[in-house]
Image: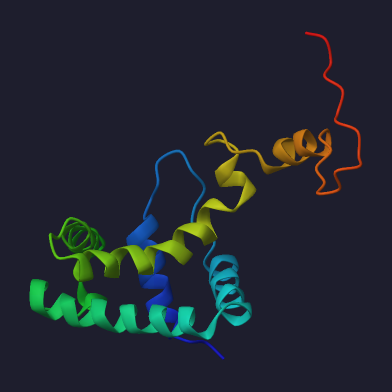
Length: 147
């Protein structure tokens, strides 16, 4: 069961990520599946908050832009999100942040996006595997290699 309609999720993904220059396109199916799984296994309050923020965004769209979010152009959606993000009111500003968190996580977790930006999870895992980490104080400390 989807928590918000797919069309609205697609609108949010394209509004937040848009056409990031030099980065891969949005993977609608994969990213929506990631967000749904994220909320399914997480705290129920997270999905409720996301749902409420989505509803609030659509109300704020009527207030700021005099049209529904769905009827705004891509540029107008981006302008609205920029306006909300730069608001002096922390509740309005938080609306954009809370909606953006799972959306950005769903995009930047993809290896074809994260690696060109300088975050290589495989390399970090390989480096971490070289260290001994334990709460067992009886283990001898790791010997430092000469430089």
